[in-house]
Length: 385
Image (cartoon, rainbow, N blue to C red):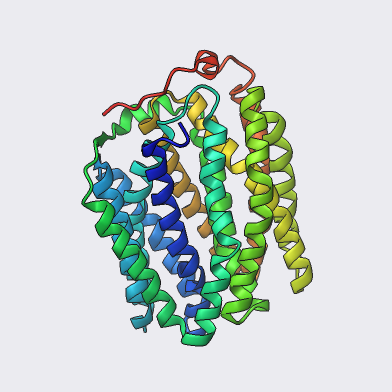
């Protein structure tokens, strides 16, 4: 199955999307700060991003798989092309809105197509492959992007990234693909019991994905050093992912791997609030990167184990992730104004993430027989229009 034409095509799409992003989008915050934008402008970008992502998710009910994947590529190209022309705060807000309106158009059909290929106990392994592509690319690509950033200038990096996204958008957007229909009420009904879990994960992402690059800018001011930092995190993540996911799929037991990794991630996240020098920052964030790489596939496979229809699973997951991310960004704003520094937002993010294992137990997600037949079966899972 992993070498089938359908899977090779999906791997190629994901690799192209993440390659272009690792090469260029990695440096968006660095450029914004160097161009004179404030941290609040960057936070505004994130607020617009997740707000408009939710607008897209609740507005688009039917996806033409390849066409919408193509739209997702084009949207990513558009924001990179616009960025060098941004001069005012509302320009950054516009870029965030365009990003939010288009990135779900990529991920909903892509994830639905990808995870519909799973058989039996393969959801964590497939998720592991999916989550390992960015770290593998991230070991090298951000370094290359950083070198180009420093030598040729940020505009060159963004225009090259935009060109990569645009070419892929045109190429894949013209391909034929099946339809994917979203039934919002049904998706939220079958996703009952998982929504809070995904929200917690999204909340942590909202804080972490915003604060990590911002704190890193205290220590790292060149494209090479900034790209090298994220390459370091990617290397650590790539070393941990597939091994643990394969063990989980073979045993059918997610929690033995999920719980310790979440506890370690939450502890290192809290430690991130108190890190004030570059060496400790590299160490603490490497700990987070290692254990997040372990837990990410399992948090995805929990949704797939519980919700039979892949489209429903991916839709409710994407919606709740973005609600959580928006709440996480709001907590960053609150910490900035109430406690005098956004780095403090790591503290509630770490403690809230620590509630994830408690919620899994409280909701009895793996203490009851959750889709035992599906986990033991070798029958291909299908998604339905």
